[in-house]
Length: 111
Image 1: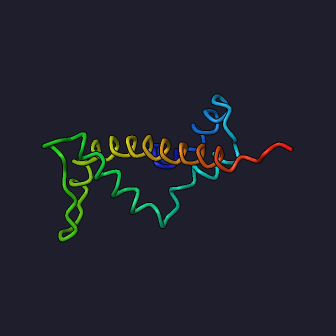
Image 2: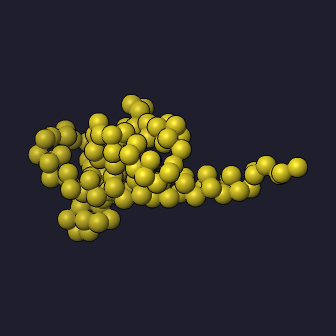
């Protein structure tokens, strides 16, 4: 939920989902805070890059050798949103699966 582009509402949407899906609420709150300031540039870049897969030939390329304008941002908004949702689904699946496997491997033996 920390990557999904509903800025400021990730916890408001995620906590009811955690109750509905019977997830650990404390772990959800910790995991939803992935969008801390040092991570934001990476998340934005990867979301934009992932969105270019959906956009095909209409994909906007990020150019770091020129000034970023509002028009450039507006033109690539759909690409970013599609990429952010896709990246959030992929990250959730990968980290959820890794956590599940880790818990299965390191499960305490009953005495």
